[in-house]
Image 1: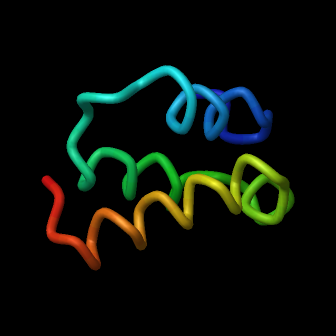
Image 2: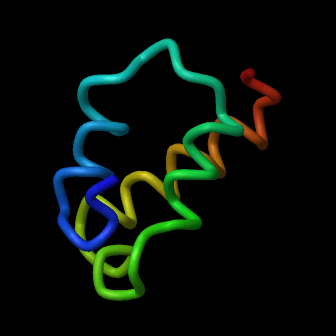
Length: 57
């Protein structure tokens, strides 16, 4: 996995629509702190929170 590149959260947010929230969470948790703080890292975190709040698989 490319956990130290912004491509990982970018792909999860923009290209992967049918993946389970638990997988998104696993990807997010493996990101480096720098990438978690990037635009796409923050977008991925927001997506996970939204899906958990709305109980979306």
